[in-house]
Amino acid sequence: MNLLIASHSACHERQLLFYRELSKHFDNTVVIGPNKWAGLSLQNSTQEGFITRGLPVVNQGSLTLFQFIALETTLQLPIIPKIDLFLIQEEWWSRATENLLATANRIGAKKILFTWENIHRPYEREKETINQADAIICGNNDAEQIIRDSGYRGFIYQLPQVGIDTTLFSPPPESPEKIHDLVFCGRPVVEKGIDTIQEAAKNNNWKLLILSNLSYRELPAQLARARIFVTLPKDTPYWKEQSGGYSSLEALSCGLPVITTDCGAIPQYIPKRIAKILKQETDMEKALTAAVKKLLSSQSDTAGARQYIVENYSNQVVAKHTAEAMEEL
Image (tube, rainbow, N blue to C red; front, side, top):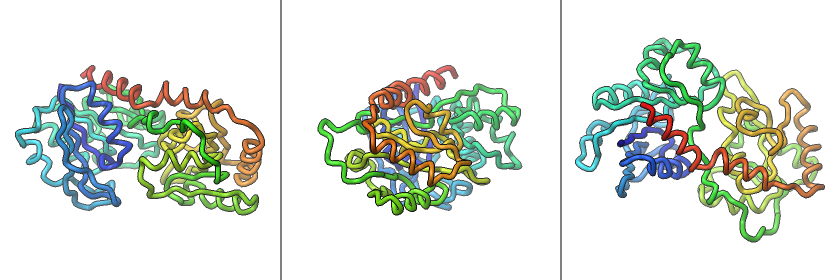
């Protein structure tokens, strides 16, 4: 079988590492993504069984309005095989999804949507769009409930969008000097609790490392220089965590103790036994301070946490489950 994947996130190394693993389950895999998006780009590459094509987009940066340009022309290239399955990793309310579904219909491919939208957003063409899919992969419980409430009666699976490269994100052979007490990785915004983290670090004279816009392959080495990974996402009317927080999962895979919250889907992805999960309704700075002090004063055994990530969220495991779901079609 030949698989086509389209995603605005395809230009991110995390996605590409997963797609390469997923491609092992198919005869040929073609990945379509933007040639420019938020400072990243998907490069054109042709390898045996794995092809990537970066396409121009209109309305770059808008998840709602962006669209790929020249997709169907690209699919007519001699190197592109006949597509059997089309995995669309865009939300069902995106204009891109409407166009990608239309393309799938024209080329006669089975259509699989991915969604982790866990806040229902009324959309006038919701049922029409969703019901075109032959299957829908949901990234969390709330996303699945939204799809079921829409009246969709096709195949529904619940799986992560991508996995973790547990070889790249692994404890270093020799532990480097821990020059930072805390490390935060991701967008340094209020929704991620960066204000509380910075205040707690300041009040306790903790050394805080903030990793943002760093090369993906550089992350493991930087994470290894810190004692504790911390992120404090909070539910908002317009956003809540749609997974376990991939940076948290990667930190756990590296063997770092993790402090996070019960925001959105985090408790579904990360059980309490492998990380410290703070309740959002508490005095967050006070709770964070207590959790950090406890971890700094004790020797944490993180081998079990890493093993949990390897067994449940490694690229190999997630790719296998994703391929099995799609092959049912």
